[in-house]
Image 1 (cartoon, rainbow, N blue to C red):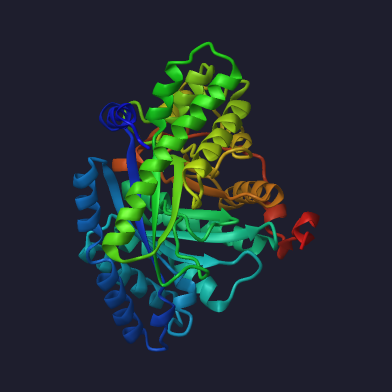
Image 2 (image 1 turned 90 degrees about the horizontal axis):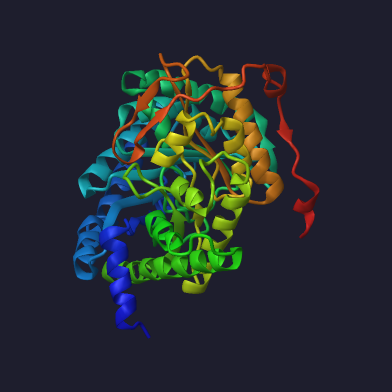
Amino acid sequence: MINRSEILETNQMIEKENLDVRTITLGISLLDCIDSDLERLNEKIYTKITTLAGKLVETGEEISREYGIPIVNKRISLTPIALIGGAACKTKEDFVAIARTLDKAAGEVGVNFIGGYSAMVSKGMTTADRLLMESIPEALAQTERICSSVNVGSTRTGINMDAVRLMGSIIKEAAELTKDHDSCGCTKLVVFCNAPDDNPFMAGAFHGVTEADAIINVGVSGPGVVKKALEKVRGKDFEVLCETIKKTAFKITRVGQLVAKRASEMLNVPFGIVDLSLAPTPAVGDSVAEILQEIGLEYPGAPGTTAALALLNDQVKKGGVMASSYVGGLSGAFIPVSEDQGMIDAVNAGCLTLEKLEAMTCVCSVGLDMIAIPGDTKDTAIAGIIADEMAIGMINQKTTAVRLIPVIGKKVGDMAEFGGLLGYAPIMPVNQFSCDTFVNRSGRIPAPIHSFKN
């Protein structure tokens, strides 16, 4: 039973500690929309999205009023469009036409992002996969709400280095086409290894083919709540520290479970998962970096950072799985640079580097996220960074991702402004030594031997 003190404690979390439901994401399968005629395909896609998601925003706002819990974003994820457009799309311009349809549908129902402009190419690329990937820069430049992702590796299949090399060029092209806005197109493009089918967080959300026709996934975030809880146990031993994080994560996840079940009932759509991810925002007091500092680091990047992040991530997951039977997605701690004021401060202080961030991704939920780099960074260097991060995911049987923003016209020390939840970021240096010969090899890095456990 929930007692009065727990209700008051939850109210405190919401009012003063930035607890929120970061997103309600409606996953929609478009498999039944497939058509060889592009015009009919677009009509079917638009109709299905606007029909199923027509009351999504209204429902989110009603639940927010009912429970007094802020629900920041209402979003849609779709079956990877490379699968849906394969029969109708003969050119990359055909895929861009679908992107415009998705953007129009998202605007009609009022969501801020729609994900699933995606391709799954961990072992190889079909003609449709390649066309969609080549269309990504134009699609992101011509739309406002589209989010794109490409899965280029997995523990089971290895890493598709042809796709990795191609993504290095695509990221640079996306940066160039949106250079008037600090290359913001790249903020909506993620490269994955081991991408989950049920992730509600953008820009990497898509509706996996293993999912039902429609599903409700909820993403909860509360780094401010965790930090406040840890302030009360300063100087205590690791057992107390871990228990505090775990108990706090449990309470946060229960809030997400409540909202998810209510949204499922109101929309008559099955409940999928709650993703408990400590996802920061640029708001003061909503920072994962500040949690690491509260644990005992001067700045993220100091010696001990990877250990502190591993502890945090593990306890968040342990608390989450006790609160809901359906914890999924990417649950854990996100470490984006641009969206976390504490991370930005650490970079500006000279404490946090790209290499240290890569080490941290070995133990956290995602990967190299929202990192601005010089606009003249070679596409082969970007591909090399992607390959490194994919290898971490493949070997460690975990999801990793890369969201790099080469900001055209800016250099190390400059600042890139993305606005809103995307925040701003200092331009970070990239190792200048060449990996051209490595990434220009064709083919695939094989899967590790433990992929044959079955």
